[in-house]
Image 1 (tube, rainbow, N blue to C red):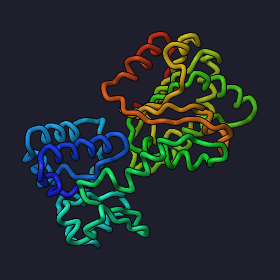
Image 2: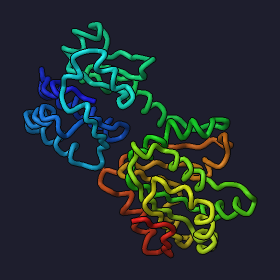
Image 3: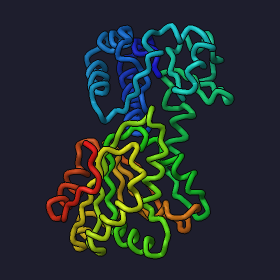
Image 4: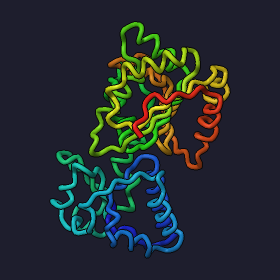
Amino acid sequence: MIESDALACAIDEAHTLATHRRLLELWMQFGVLVYSPRNLRFIDAINAQPLARRKLWQAAVASPKFRKVHCEAAVCDSLFEGESEILSLASQVDLVCLEPTRACAYYLENDEHGKIYPQAGMEICRFDCADQSSAFSKEKEAWQQMIYVGCPRSTVWETRFEGLSLHAQHISIVDRYASLNLVERHHAGKASGFEIFLRLLNGLDSNKTRKKTISFFVSDLAPTDDVVAIIRRTCGSLLRNITSLVLFSAPDHQFKRVAHDRFFRFDGLVTSVGRGLALFEEPEITANFSCSLAVDRQGDFERNVERVLRPASRMRSVFDFG
């Protein structure tokens, strides 16, 4: 959440523009803006900025690549007037970015860029130091690390995929071996990684998450009809937060050129996941693997991977509630 007055702060425009660019980059990759489109002061603050900054913010607020959550409590800036008012939003907000003068006058020492309230699970920081906040630093650090043997599946979900899933409207999974793993585990009486992933999606708070469409790209190593039948049989009760699920079964040789790695795309964010859906199969991780996050700025991933696999695939609509 951002205080409106923070957008107007500008001692040196070149420095200020760079500060705003850094925050917008972090917002696009790791953050979710909590705001109210009815907060006219915030909208006016965006429109009152110099041209370069104004264009950046107007584009970000309009773009679906920048994740946003509407919060009616943010309809006016009076909630920034006291610590108790700010902390009252702790259940909805992790980081509050304040205009630097206000932050230092009421909340921070002169040498502090931010303050954490552990019991509330919230952080207050200076707007111009948002890139140094603990909230963003933890996200960046998490995605710079590998996932190691013994790490609980629940931790991987909570630190990597829960937030991405919560705010995504479309999820694409590109996993060459997922169909074969799904069939083999079903015959062994075990839940597949795909089934467990759907369970986790099903567990998201339906009052906070968006309904999702899922595209599932696999190779034809397993018969498509068998894969569809198993998904319908095992996952039919796991669709609370899903409007449609479409399976694309492509010839295996296509994956050698188009998608040798395994990927999850959450709207405009793409994760490269070394183990693919298999990472969810056991309560603890059984093999070390890499897991990175990138912004698909111009839709390159969808264009060069999904749109190449789609026409080569046998497509089956597994569930459709649209």
